[in-house]
Length: 265
Image 1 (tube, one colour):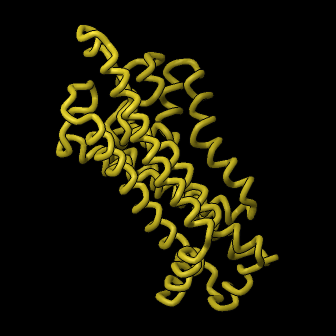
Image 2: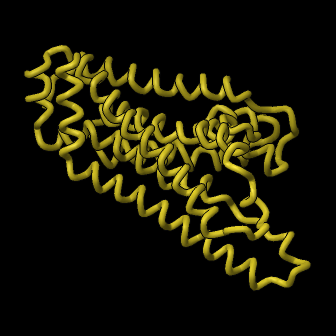
Image 3: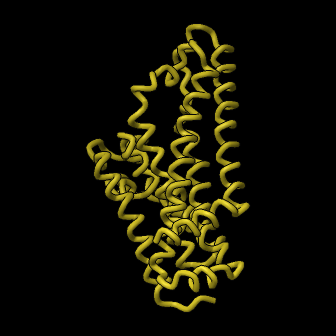
């Protein structure tokens, strides 16, 4: 297993697509700094009596959207690039135990996605606070100690998306198909769920990936937050974490079953 892990780490590290994805993560953090500068300019242009009413999303939350997509793409490419180049045959000849190959890929991609997720959240936080300075802008004044639990929780979601992407990529063996499935699951299905009649919009939404990230951070499901469902519906942070883990188990379980039974082409 150690040899398989070292091999997968080397492949992931040497793939150009990995660095492109990480470059997109860095660009997303820089974009959050530009966004914060825009919020500061907007705040300074307002009359003093209207400044307290200015609301804007915190950069450490906003950066999750592109980083989650980047992590999912990284997870998909970890396996589909090998199918596209035929490298998967070499991998399975070198390590005949297909489950060990998949497990090694999962550990390698999870480590990179977790590091990228946590680093991007903290980088966006510190960049945002540096741009805001001592201006009392709503949402930008909470100290690091107060935001730390939420930031650590939400920084986990890119790792979950990367592993779900790895599972889908293994099952579908198609980069475009797997990335499309992840995007639909993460951002399209929740919008349809919100349109369902209450309280099913909140009940269904509470087990979808986007709302699980919100609930992991201690927030309510999207339908409840928008006032389209009553309060009291949703999962606690530990329950949300358990459901997120179930997504990973199902995705990698399906991937292991498919990879172990079919021939490699």
